[in-house]
Image 1 (cartoon, helix red, strand yellow):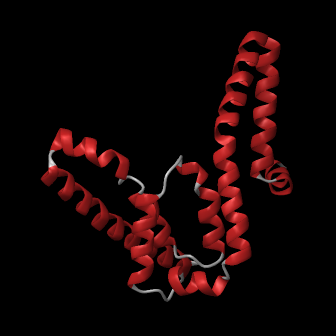
Image 2: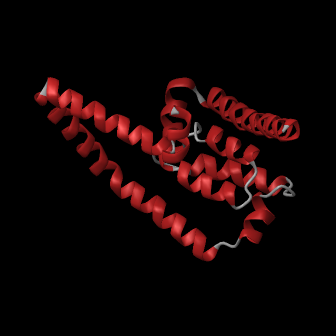
Length: 173
């Protein structure tokens, strides 16, 4: 019975309902705590709203301007080295909280982007260009250079492994 409810409503709506019920219970037990939690939520939501707006605008523009064929040429299953380089570069230069990139990456995946390239992009977000000068100051140029090269190389290895695991999972179905 519960499985049927989950299938009809979907996990997202069940989560939202559960959070609402939890807030209601907390409001009944401790109204002060519920109000503080709601204020914190609204404050965080207002802070991330501009970034969410930018991400959804980029999604809108990408849907209008970028055709599936172009994505498949650069990031699809038959791409060669260019797709990996694009994933590395865009991962390094991307900014903002990681969870705000998930909708865009999901949209690109639906259009044909390879899972290995998504993993490579996410891994390369650890290379932060604005922090490099401070890292040079604390750790030295050689260390930072070697660390950055290793991170890029391991991002490519990570993407390759993810791709092989996804292919293996697809074959077992």
